[in-house]
Image 1 (tube, rainbow over the protein chains, first blue to last red):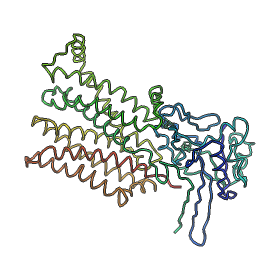
Image 2 (spheres, helix red, strand yellow):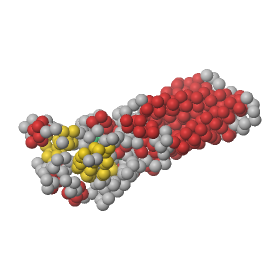
Image 3 (tube, chains in turn cyan, purple):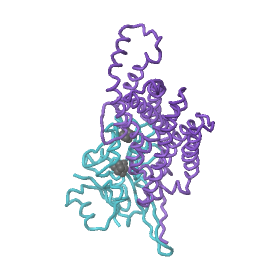
Length: 177
Length: 313
Ligand code: SF4
Ligand code: SF4
């Protein structure tokens, strides 16, 4: 099983509902976020292209943050979800330095925090909060190892990219183009 | 020209707009670790060569400072941890893939060994010292018999420790400026040079002073060679590595690095050391202090610059 997320950049309007939903669902302290919106404008005037992305931890299959962790606090959980065990984290921040996406942060309580794919919901068969709240249905969550899952079919059909694949982390968030 | 403007809604403290998770504690930790490794290396090396009496500052006296330096270094590391209550987790796990982990374990091995090593020279240094307890006298006599094997172990551990101070950084692929295999050898050389300068600074004997001034001169040359290769490597690599190097070639770190680290920390003291060896009346402490200060600066700038360098997307 390999949990992944496909995010449709053609649908996302950058409303930040996913950001707020995550902050509420996971009780994220004010000023911090586990997911965020990036807008990228590229091209030469007048041929400009706008891409809006909802970003978060990529739950990399080859996660440098897990390798950098001296205590196994950062570990790979069920379905490849990359998690941090609060009571094993010493706050050395090696994992933050090792993440090319800057997806992690130091929680005000001292341990390192990041997106969990809402594992507490996923275990009950629900979607991550950001996926369910998205008004344009831009996000799909599921198991990439199951060829019949909605996400696997969508990724097979559409053009997609992952972020900085050249960093070699094998990210599991697919941006549909 | 095709351009890309990226706007991010993320404003995480210590992460945006540029990463700043490590302040003064980690560079100080790396400096002290490298310095201690350098002292242990020379002490063990000249013990194996039976030159402990000729180079007594290097072999017998300075090792007394090593446990203190290591304790201060570990103290700095501890101060940096943001979840201190769980510090002990470092020593209930061994993770070979994590430099943070094997470095912590190396320190755990080196620290007690450095205490035993320093103790083995106590009688030489303080012949009139009355150790009072018989068991203490016996223990010190016993460790004296093992000085040679201990020296071998220390040489190996000192090299590992010195390299580790650089590898801790170079293992981070996510920070292009750190991600160079040169970092380990560069930090090892810089640690050895710091130790050589400290020995030259403190040695009372003229022969010892000039020996370590010569050693330091060679180490400075090696360091300059590594620094040139560091930048050549970056410039021959990917776009993000070139951008990382550009922070030092016209960017924000240009003056601090080339003036303070390379100029005042390496090149000028090297010249002064040459003059000193030619008996031109340069006091030893001037170049020695410049070298020590430069190597501290090197850690600060490299730790800072690595955090400022990143992959762009
Ligand atoms: S995105 Fe960063 S934090 Fe998430 S798994 Fe990859 S390296 Fe680790
Ligand atoms: S900060 Fe915590 S989770 Fe991150 S590497 Fe250190 S111990 Fe592991």
